[in-house]
Amino acid sequence: YAANAEKAESRSPGAPTGEEPKGLEFVATPGMRTVEEVTSFLGVPPQKIIKTLLYETDRGLVAALVRGDREVNEIKLQQVVGTLRLELAQGATVEEATGAPVGFAGPVGLSLPLVVDREVAALANAVSGANAADAHYVNVNPGRDFPLDTVADIRLAAAGDGCTRCGEPLAAARGIEVGQLFKLGDKYSKVMGATFLDENGRERPFIMGCYGIGVSRTMAAAVEQHHDDHGIIWPPTIAPFEVVVLPVNSKDAVQVELAEKIYRMLVTAGYDTILDDRTERPGVKFKDADLIGYPVRVTVGQKAGANQVEVRLRRTGETTVVGVNNVCATVAALLPG
Image (cartoon, rainbow, N blue to C red; front, side, top):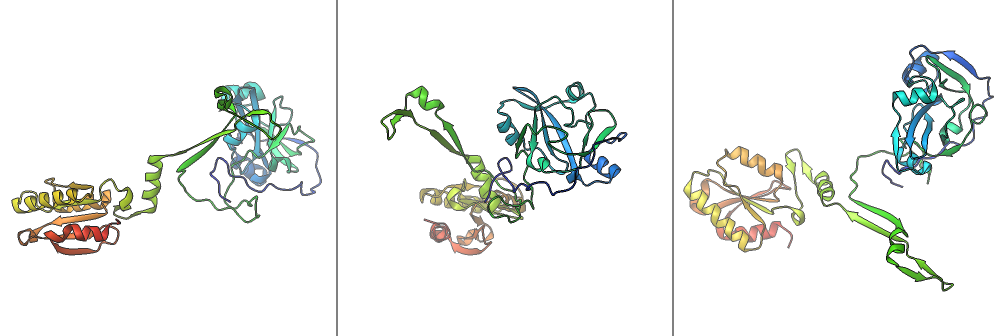
């Protein structure tokens, strides 16, 4: 199982642990706004805290409830609520809706639709804001002290969570979303009159989908897989240029003339070739060639007078000295046909 952060699901807890519900208590928590401050002040773990976040939507304000050690997955929340607009409510809006500053909102007595994460629904004797400045409730029990209007998975999955398929811990890794699939439903097929006859002979609109592959994302993915400490190592099939011809001394007429000759030979042979005839120091040009990642570098240096050059494969660093007439054959052996 693999998914991006927007869609990833993790195994939800089962029923409450059987902990005996205690009586709801109102406690003073002066200046304790954050989860970290409340856990330290009350001596409870963040898993026991109900974090209440208010969002502005097409349907008005809604409250999203997740555990103190979790973050709201706004993509999931948006789908559960069924809204196009989803914005985290700011201070003045929160205070008007709850009667308390940001940091003290809670579900008990809150007259807003509640979207409760499954982990929160399974809590017993939890802690939440009391909708009053500098105060929290302890021994909050979902279903008893506030209604479970909507219970759904609205949290970001995290490394170590159980997999919904096999139960093994999930692992988090960086990745690049190269392609996307979209289910369009029948929105466009109805407009276009694109229909088919079902098994009962009734006309129905097609269910449409589409996909996209990002060119720039594909390049980024390739670079992530093909690089070293010096720069990019382009696979020849997608390299902007396959070969760079580099005269070491651009003021040396012999080197420049030979470099231009080799450049023309390679272009005629069908290779995407670039000539680096800048007047920069050799070290700068070598560094740039490695950074940009040309698969093959042809260096025209002190042996130019003898019609010999160096051919270097970027991927391995292997260098071969060859005669000018053998340059194309050597490059052909290094690059896929």
